[in-house]
Structures are given as C-alpha cells and as structure tokens.
Length: 251
Image (cartoon, rainbow, N blue to C red; front, top):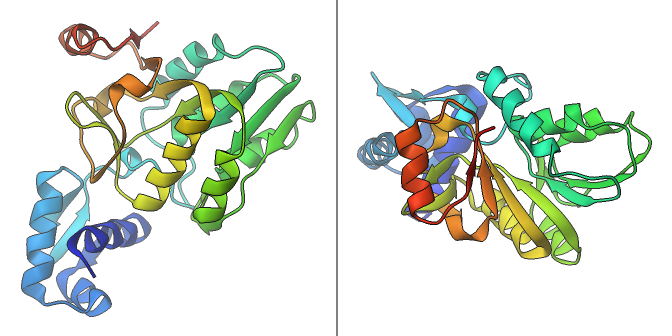
C-alpha cells in the first residue's frame, strides 16, 4: 500500500472511531509501528489529527467533509445557517442544482422550499431531508455507501453524464496555493465530476476552513464562481483571496 493510500485509510479509521492506536494501525495496514508513527506525524503536520500517547485522535472531526452516522449535527451551526441563507439567493425555481455532501449543504437542503427544482446529491442525510418535499425532483447517483455518502466509479460516471446548472461544493480546506482539498480520492473524484458537469460552481465553506489543507486537491480556487462563507471570516483573509481574483461572499 502506497503512503497516500495509507494516509486515506488512517483518516477513514479515525473518522469512524475518533481515536486509534499505533498497534491497531500497524496490524490493519500490515506495516511497522515506525512507519505508522511517521505517517501520523505527517498527518499531524497537516492539522488532520493529533498524536496522543500510543496513537492518534481526530483534530476536528467536523472539518472532514463527511458526517459520522451518529453525528448528523455538527459544530458551527450558526455559521452554516448563515452560509445556507446566502446560498439560497442563487437558487431559483426550476434550476438543476447539485448539493455536494456535507453539513453546510445539508443546511441548504433544510432551507429549500418545496418548489419545482431538480437536486442531484450523493448525501444520504440530504436525500432524507428532501424526500418529503414532493415538488423537488431528487436525482441520486449510484455507487457504494461510505457513511452518509454514495461514492465510487458508478457515481462519478453518472454525474459526468448530467447537465447541472449550479453546484454547491464543500471542502475540508480552502487554501490560496492548494485550492479546495479533501482527504480521500473517492470523494475527490466525485467532486471533480460535479465541477466538470456544472455550468456554475459555488464553494461553500465555514471561515475556519480557510488556510486549511488536506491530502488531495480536487479543484483550484479559479474553478468556482465564488466562495460563500460566513461573516466571521477575517477581513484580511477575505482581502487576500479577493486580491487573488477570487470572489468572496459573506453577506
């Protein structure tokens, strides 16, 4: 198993368990404890985990872009509500939109009126939220389930065949140099497909994700029309992104 795949597997295990020991990872990945400790050090440098005695724990589980089956409600609810309210301004009746998986896009789904609209999503929580809204046409790609997400080649192929007007994309990190990042390749491939199939792409990210960077870049900042975030984004940070030609919307 190559190092990048080991990193992804470690993060998958941590997302499910919140904590893991070096011995457990060594056995599951069939590598030495020394290799695991080196992997954990690299992931800690990226801010994805915190090393503890004999193992590691998640740094900030709500930043990972995937929700645990036991945690559909996450932190920073006020900021996510603020972002969702802004996002609704860009959605009109009869639009064909895509809601990427995540807690912020889930908040957008909760606030959507029952109206003529087509919504493409691979997030099981969003699907559950939209099912009672009978006027919304719900389009669900295929794929296999990873907690609350449907991913895999089937999902990517299906999305690549669609014509989507507007996509709302989430990320683990938003970085001036590294762009939009996530920590697993399966989710990166799906996000790339959404971007390729969409006429307009909106990034949605809480202010604390700015300056963060995960393992895989799935889009450059220039590939989105704008980034919708909350009003707690520091003015200096917003200026840096605007100076780089990125439209930032905070209200």
